Length: 321
Image (cartoon, rainbow, N blue to C red; front, top):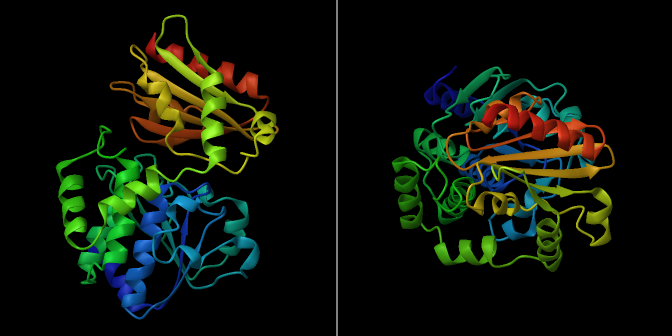
């Protein structure tokens, strides 16, 4: 693995960058992308951003939001590709990968313990609560001033990946960095209103569907939500991927593992894993070709929704007893 100092020297020495995050981007991915974008712009670099899917409207208050591009509108890129918050190269998804088919070289900045160090230059810190924390430190190494816009983006990333500092991945460093970001212009009220108090109506309807389709295992240790594509289509919510809905499974007393089975299209199932304390769901997700963190992980499987669900739940039962 490379050091952040080595990564910083590469960013200083070259000019043409494409920043890319994972498909179905979350707050950490988006915040890290926008913060590094602004930082490289301050340095006078030529830089663009790429995501496979449009980002949720709740992040529209962050500077640079409108500059993120979709792969169908981009030609093949042959500069330097910087992967953010991606545990493996395939997480950016197929169309984005086509754009990145022939980069000059690649840089990988991430905090997932399952990261496979796929790039030419890799910095992976699994102790960081969010990739946004890594970007904060990288910008310091680059001697880039943290502007209010950069601070807002990094703060959003940390807030979302730590669950507002309630998840077990929260560290003293997370708190210290967040405090510094607030002192540099991150607006706590603006973040709260946009991230948690500006939900579109379809998302609230999606929550209702989720709660209607929540089930418990007989021993009360596993709670799961199942979302069929046809149910999502019925309320116009196929394009909504709220980050916090799976956490309702973890709110129930006695539950050790929470699961979300979402059919993103017929025959394609996205699986979310959450644990309350001791169960390592990253290891569980790895059994299904996924990955993530000890208390939050994910995977994707092809197959019938009911069959994927039964297989995964049995795998969880085999681990927790």
